[in-house]
Figure (tube, rainbow, N blue to C red):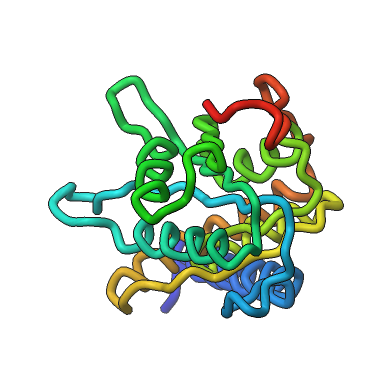
Length: 216
């Protein structure tokens, strides 16, 4: 016999599963048509927004494939003339952890000129990166560069606030890491759904004009 506590637990699980499925489908529905999988299918714009990732895996003992593939994708877009500038947006902390600088250095190693790369060290979350690209860098359209699942969420948040962001899907990683990431992404999409329709957007910092202001 199922007791009351078990019924509540079952109901909660089913409710969460339905919410998660709905959030996943809706985010993809809104954003997926605006993401290209091939460089030739990308419509040129002024700038690309590279979403942050650590250059090393969680254990710190190996390169992070998510990071490497995003850098490859961003460099490919620049070299193909699809973007003029890159904004690398991620987390930077006092302990020396610095995603934007790692991304900038990796892009330079791929042949992207330093004066074409702008760092945003306050991209603590995807929402922050999107908001700051618009509010501080003045972009109403940009190419979001990340793995498809991540780019979908960023574009969803941008487009629900009237921005014309599109995306380019970087290569994804193997199935093992994909399962772990997808589990986290499921929750993140629920948060994004709530956040996109309820939160005001704000960004602290000095406004930057690409091409006029020097990259920091």
